[in-house]
Amino acid sequence: MLRNYFKTTWRSLIRNRNYALINLSGLMLGLGVAIVLFWIVRFEYSFDTHHAKADRLYRLIAVDKYGEKGTSVPQGVIKALNEQVPGVENAANAYGYGSNGLRVGQQLFNVKHLFFAPPRFLDMIDVEWVKGSPQQSLSQPYQVVLDEPTARRFFNESDPMGKTIRFNNQTDLV
Image 1 (cartoon, one colour):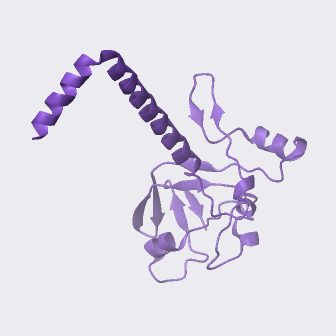
Image 2 (cartoon, one colour):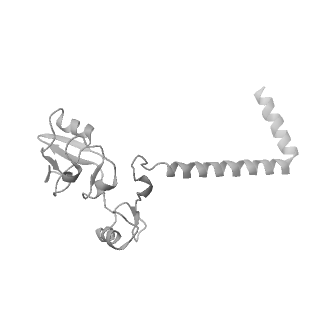
Image 3 (cartoon, one colour):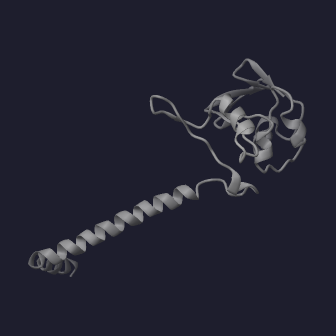
């Protein structure tokens, strides 16, 4: 039965070539536009929108002379944005690192998403604090902020406040 439908359709397409060409062109154009719109909408909705200031958060992309794209820009750009651009309320760099080894006591952990950021970064995003305070969290060098699942993974049920984490086997973070 299905085979008969395909035969009939094929014969109709051969008999009415111009009509078939117009219909197939319209179908391909419509599908192409639908796919492009899908990718645009998907890209637009892929950003964090749960922050209170989500409509005012922007991410800068730096492109070097070789065409490579990166999400961190030179510190001078951040300083210039904060001081010289009137519409900018706050700007901060967040340097992301790939997979890294962190040592807690004698135990080694592999962490996939690790960021280094200045204290003003926490003013830009909404973070629910379980322990500690936003004002003191990154006030000194080599301080760390952990989310609750990571703190539980590193320290089990003990209090993580004031404990040391060794980064890349050389730098101690508290």
